Image (cartoon, rainbow, N blue to C red):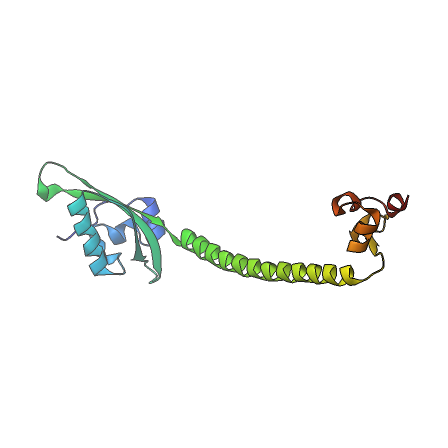
Length: 178
């Protein structure tokens, strides 16, 4: 069934680049990039009674393709011959660009997450190696921050003081030797 355009609003003019005069009386499929897809959408409209959020492409007057989201409903005016369809097309370009940017950001985030996992694995390994090495040393080893708070100790300090790590870490070295 041929569908001719009978009414055009300002949004349709802006979206398509055509004037009202360019569109009124012309076949609807002149806007469709894919005429077969256009016919499929119209058939689906008649089969289902309406269309909602159908992703497709329109051809603008300047020849550029534009992604649109279609919603359509028939207007019944007495006889089947006088049936009209209201089609609302929304520019989908910004959504597609945002979605593409989101996908790229997710890939970047996954890559950075993997790098951090690798780094944390190396830090954990270095910590374990330090602990194993320092625990083999027979001398007492205490690492402090600039303020004198104990950050790390080896096993010999724990055994010498007869206190658990949790009681020693975070106190000042002066308090430990008193």
